[in-house]
Amino acid sequence: MSGYQAYGRAQNTTENPRSTEYRLLAQVCGALTRAKEGKRGTAEFVDALLWNKKVWDAFIIDLSSDGNQLPRELRAQIIGIGLWVGRETIQVLDGNGDIDALITDSSSLAGTDPIDLAFEGKLEEIEHVALRSFREGINPSGLILLAINHAMILKRLVNVAHNSLDAALRAEGVFFRRIDRVRVQAGRWDAPMLKRAIETLAGAQLQ
Figure 1 (cartoon, helix red, strand yellow):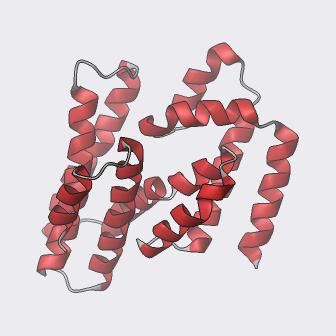
Figure 2 (spheres, rainbow, N blue to C red; figure 1 turned 90 degrees about the vertical axis):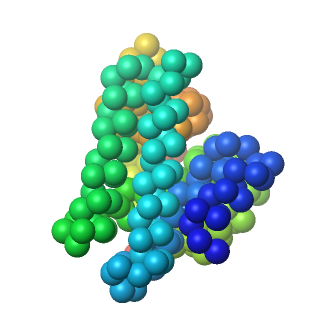
Figure 3 (cartoon, helix red, strand yellow; figure 1 turned 60 degrees about the vertical axis):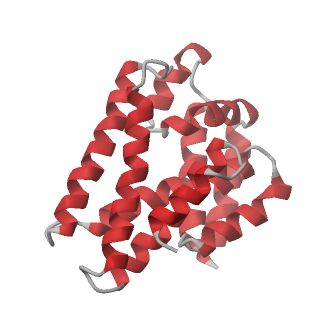
């Protein structure tokens, strides 16, 4: 199934919009990784790149709408990333761009769903979502590294005054779709708990 076909199928499912977005990003990451390992210029290669661009184009449209409630500065920053994805996609198609940068960008977002579930305490849901991420191109080591980085972000956020939290979230570069989730997580955890989580995850990374 091509990237565009999968995109259309996902739009017709009954899952919530956030789950659809994470699933699409995981699928896109897998497609980009396979494209990198294959031959440039093939239909699969071009389809993967255009699919990734289409997802980011959808984010740009959402952020540009009058009804979007995110702060103007944050919206501009994310739109800037989406515009960069578009330009870099053209460069890669021309043989001059960096597909690794596109993969890193998409994989970082695709891997956040199981991480958010973990830090929200929804342990019964993690295995299914993590396995889905692995199938779509996120490896276990990469997922653990993302979790360590996220725990370190939370550790910084828990020490921030409540009235400064939104500014701190923007400064940390938290993806706009995750801001509400991460804000809740920062209220659930404290510094000692996060220190233990980081040590546990670091130990798992070494195994």
